[in-house]
Length: 319
Ligand SMILES: Nc1nc2c(ncn2[C@@H]2O[C@H](COP(=O)(O)OP(=O)(O)O)[C@@H](O)[C@H]2O)c(=O)[nH]1
Ligand SMILES: [Mg+2]
Ligand SMILES: [Zn+2]
Image (cartoon, rainbow, N blue to C red; front, side, top):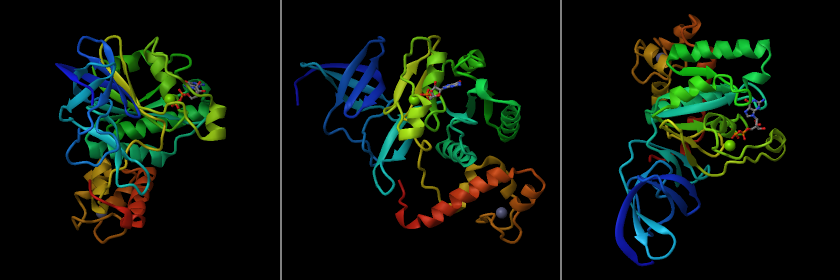
């Protein structure tokens, strides 16, 4: 442990690669930091004690890297299990105002269940979510019709939806306005254009982007760590590694419908309060699907989460 000078500074973690952290001080200066060995955050078992978005106290060290010695309580945070069977979680980002899912209708197409799982997870974290449909420039008339249908569906549930192109700049101006003064997470499956979008929104951000062929052939992605990028007019975007979904919430089966707002609303009419909406007598959700008040695709996503929970019961743990 190097000698600390006693000088303390406040800042925000803007990048985390392994055990190295970049902290932006209130002065705007960015300094590399490490985490003091005994820093532990109560309540969650995580592989990283400090995450991008954290507000931290830094102690100046005598040698080159300074030390993060304290983390302010998080307003919220999103985690991912370190691996499927792991008990440890990795914090992807904290202190978010909005979670944006960047999707594409092709090259690569984002599955509907992926979208709905993302939205349900955002509901569980109580973080407002929006959907950004990118790559408008490659869509034909059928794709645009699908984009419009998705916009209609998700906006009717309460999620903002916008169609943009990082390549041509279509829709980027309004998106930039929306992002102002917020800390927004950009999530999405690999190759949908998260890094390209950030580069289009923030000229000079200079994030690395992948070639589609690389994604298809090797399954790898260019972003391997979370990174925060400042918007020139105020606000931040956090780019997280291109992975499947942005969180692994351990839902209780009877709670899954709480995170599908329109299903939750209809469920107030179910006879039993623990109704799972899978054919129980007096269920009000099934008739709502038949009336098209609830989309089939949303119900299918709901069921897929429910089924997965029942399959993986033996691996579940509270956190
Ligand atoms: N045609 C088109 N290609 C795009 C667009 N946005 C990104 N791409 C391409 O999609 C691939 C993946 O982009 P990248 O930003 O690395 O995706 P990420 O994995 O989500 O960060 C790259 O080849 C980009 O050039 C877009 O709006 N239109
Ligand atoms: Mg990327
Ligand atoms: Zn029901």
